[in-house]
Length: 325
Length: 277
Image: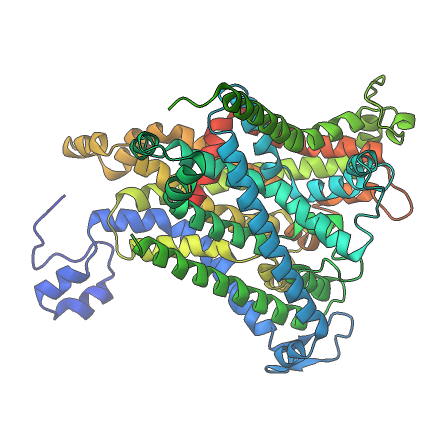
């Protein structure tokens, strides 16, 4: 493998032209730029994945930003052309955009907080339960992997339909009374938040269960000897020990909440009116219901910037937390 | 140190209550769909909900007689299987390279790969639509396949990298010393040790493509209609066919559930692995 690089050997795979171009360079420089077999093999193995990602993941971003600078309306193809930042200017004065941003904020924050609190509570409550673990694992796995759009449709019909849905029946039975869960603005937002929480609390539960199982035993034994109460043990041992897991869960959940689309689209389509119209749905509706692709592209770009900003902010938070002892 | 007996009983009861609650909250809605799919039409809209009924396959017959449903299920199966195979062919070698080989820009390229999965799908939808319509590839198998790879490749590369990192490298090093080629060390020594990881990556890629909705709704039409799009046909504004809808929902969810049951422990690990990056 480590053949001595002779001064007259051409770099393998290099064309004669390339060889001539570097022919005058000193041997040391030539050796520095030549990849060894391992590096070439490595690059060969990762090349297909990188090509695919450049093609279907990075190039589209440039197309998106490009499209956001144009006026593209499929219903009125004759109004077209370059508008520069016109779409963005329109966005700033668009009340529906600011409304969708607000809904996105409420939806994201409440679902993330609810998931983390409930997931942690269930993980703590069930940490010592041995019986039924297999059954439990299957039950909590289901909501995460079931087809999200089908989950949304099932909630809309079999669970939340007034008078016939299972949850509405429970509401009647418990005295809350029958409600138009997806027809009323406030209730619809609460319902889709509940649905997303149902789908993704299991994820938080599973991560925290794994972290709890891996906690060291010694500090707890010491705390018991010192007579610490269970609340003190939770507050001063478990919570600090779980902090890294907590921060990572927050970041992952935040990203997934900002990607939410399928279930909410199936359940309400953003309605009633715009009551559950998160930014994702607004961009989709503008682009593919109103067929205004240019403005939709500008909204999507705003969504990307929002995701990027939130991720970077949390990334900094994570490094700050990891830096503190 | 010993707590009074009654607090221990109480905390035991609370644990059982939490277990029961968790099982009920997450399992009942799914079981409810299954029950509705075999309920006679007259029993679906009864209050209180009927728990005892004579099961019937009537709704499955109706669903499968709706031309769109069997065709879209077949479409979904073909596209999801091909996505899975292509994803494996692309990401298993990449995962090995990131885990084992020294090459320039290794770290930045891996971070780039992970970063691409952060983008919300809605952001890609408009460019995909514009480019595919220009190339006349809307509503074609190659078009949707290529796009589904954008959803599976990033996490599959990440999963395969961690699985390869988990197996000891001594065997490969010994083989290399004995004159085995690099590709031989990858294919004959390392790969057989991560078959379990390959299976998880395959299952999660399949589920990802099978469940996908937003791209399918815009980028495919009649010809390549996928099952998650076709199921909307039962819920028009004029009528709501709960029975056939529930039957179709079961048909769509069944493969996912079976795959998950087949490898539940490994899948839980694969799904939560993303949380520890």
